[in-house]
Image 1 (cartoon, rainbow, N blue to C red):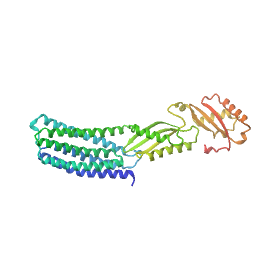
Image 2 (cartoon, helix red, strand yellow):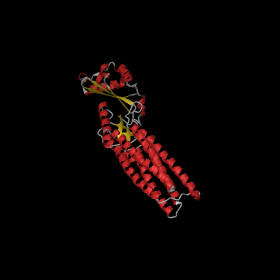
Image 3 (cartoon, one colour):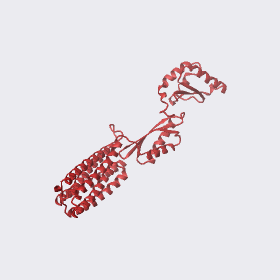
Image 4 (cartoon, helix red, strand yellow):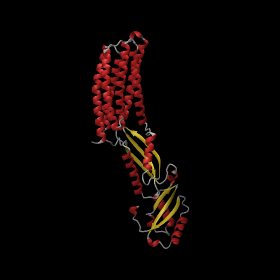
Length: 387
């Protein structure tokens, strides 16, 4: 089964399980919170309602994130999961604020404080067991598929379990005569909810603004690339997250005079090495450089091949047959152009004659400031289609 399909199925299954449990808990907590006069239990019921809303969000996110990349979304739909995580964080924040404000008003007015009955403790205990089970079930899926949304939802279940523990303690304290403890427990629950919302929302927002991976992971990526044969240096390494995946862009410096196909082969090794070595890395863009192009931007002012060949043909017409000039190699390095000229064996007379021809070629083109060096090689002439 493809990873994205399995991921989507896990999101759907956990959200359905969570929705069923939280629907039941919401009804039980709110009804029995009113019956047992426990403000903390009612607040915990509202927390379960927030859990239910996030389960619905996860279910909707599962439908969209599994969609394949298309023309309008070439990187896929993983960011939908991130957007839902932000919405989840906002829901948690609003829920926490509402609970805290209501509990605070009751603390300021003693006659509005509720006096819970022992039954509220039993309901809180049931909630603890149910939500702790949901936490472990959802967290297992979150770790398997590296899903930020499932991770957030798992902690939402855990926060509900912990808040139920606080409710249990608050109700117990109220029964022992500490009448403020039930309301105080409500505020503690609200703070816990707000903290979870902040942590999950912060992580999702950092992803949405393309924050880089953790420094340790970036160092690992850099080390893996450096170990690939043919890689001389690395620059402009950029990383970002998209859902549970990591994307990498990097400029790799190789020997400046190797062939295009060899440079491409090195880039493919770099790409596959990262994808095979780091599970969360799913897409790598490798830019091959003959030198550090962040330092040698002057190359952008140099003419392209058609103009270079046309100008050199005019001044070298009496020295070299123009057809051999058409198949020369041009190297754009350090702001100038180096020319590799391949001539047939019959052009070779002696090393001294070859050196003299090189000097004549350089002298004839000396007024072209972009020309740095000419190298002459002798062998079988290449076809124009091979260059």
